[in-house]
Structures are given as C-alpha cells and as structure tokens.
Image 1 (cartoon, one colour):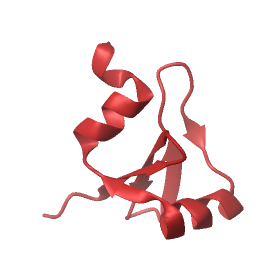
Image 2 (tube, rainbow, N blue to C red):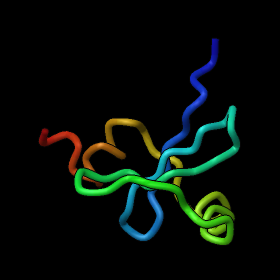
Image 3 (cartoon, rainbow, N blue to C red):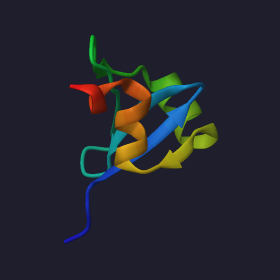
Length: 64
C-alpha cells in the first residue's frame, strides 16, 4: 500500500497533503490546520516536495 501523504515546503513552511482526501494542511508545533483552496493550489504548483523528516524539521516537530 502506498503512503497517502506527501510533504511540501512552501515559502519556508511545511505542509502535508493527504492524497486520499485531496486536502492539504499546514504543519506546526503551535498550530496546524486547514489551508484555503487558493493557497493549496499555490503549494501544489510551486512548493517543493520533501521528505517527512524534512517537513518535521521545518515545522519544529522534530524537537518535541
């Protein structure tokens, strides 16, 4: 079974894309949440796909 999640770096922030739900969420220690549709398009078109480990580093979850 393929991993349903992809991780993106967009303008120095980490995002997680759920390929099953076709939704993207911001990642963070203080706050995680939904992303507006317009921003989703920008992230998917211009963001850099990164590893889960790199996404955790960017948003600070690796320090918990």
